[in-house]
Image 1 (cartoon, helix red, strand yellow):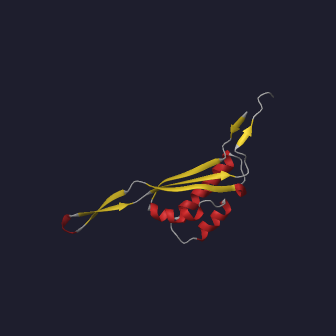
Image 2: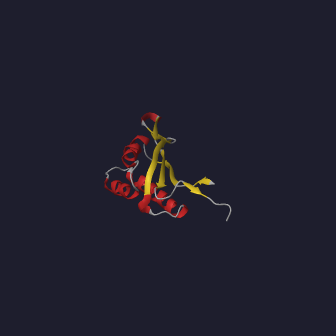
Image 3: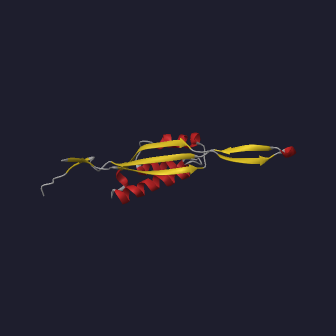
Length: 128
């Protein structure tokens, strides 16, 4: 019998205090690249969004090594997406007793890592 084997793991960062548009600018650069190449790219890019994404990629690799017993050299980022989160709303006091609304955008980042060395389908022998 052939059974499908889990070869992908993910890391999810929610409510990251940053615009989704700014995070997508970095995510688009790393999608489809290997794990080691991604870490080098994120360390050298000058954007503020790189640090939380770096932590998520590192966390996804740790999840892969723990859950799949995979080597970091075989990991590839298959899916990386950024979704808009809730906006943190604050009121700033203004002149003559009025208030001004300040909205701080947040985003949710998902990084999916796949181990290319593992076979996706495994044949299982139940007779043994």
